[in-house]
Length: 427
Image (tube, rainbow, N blue to C red; front, side, top):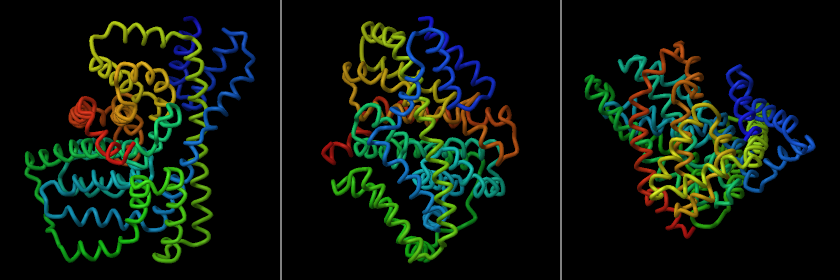
């Protein structure tokens, strides 16, 4: 109990002081082992390495690299233009297009903060010009950008699969249904807001433009088809699909769209390497933190007592949601899943919760945590776009929190949404 208390207090102090999350996780773990156990501190480095020495994580560098190639090679821009063209003429079309653009870009980048910055830089001025208001526009961006964690290929799903042994392909399939529900909740509120404030679209749907942009983006559709179609039909494993998508994206960007140069490729390699290193060091730090928590036996005892006293799995699901919503406010989604999923996995499965459904629920929770006050990461990222302080931004996300919580309840208590496609694919 002492080591657990010290670990949590140390973590809270360091995170409050603004210490980077990977340093907070590893340092608090190191100090706990050093002061309260007789274990050789060399085990800390072994556990950090063990946290990233997992086969499922091999897909992460490929997906990151493929996404950067698509962004720099013009493939992502063509997809975004195509999405925007389809939504012209609808009431609230600019807001709906923003959400759709975040979903598309998020599925490519796999990073919620990167999605907020990339799409926010393009769409925030447009939203303000269309009279959506600063509050609504900011709330829309931070909540829509969080969908990057839920829509495949999601690095967070890969992390969950690596620590629990659940099929990453099944998780990707499960994320599609949940991602649609999450996105529809935001779209529905955007439409309601536009109607309430009488915001009409000045543009008209132009089928000729749609056709032209469809042809222009044709080759860009290949990457999601390779990833999801290949996995769904059993042609590729998730890792193989990631590798093939890199080769395909390079080929299209170099020889079809011709927007890549050798200099750009070198810069992409550097950028991807930095991103991959950040992800991996965070996962390693989260692994050692999770190990120290596990060795204290406090969470296992608490969870065992909770499970034994619960009347049904539905109450347990509610408790899981509360735990992960809070965790998502303070730490990166991948780190939250790495630390907490192993502790909850066995009790959840024993009580009758499907492992794929559990993974989708956890990731949906950390999506919402990403923009939940007071410490949701997307809130801080959005300040560079809006020029507003976090304290001013926080109230504007409340409506989006409410609608996404409704989506979370639907995802949690209607498992068929997450399990339909995995079962159809034979998982």
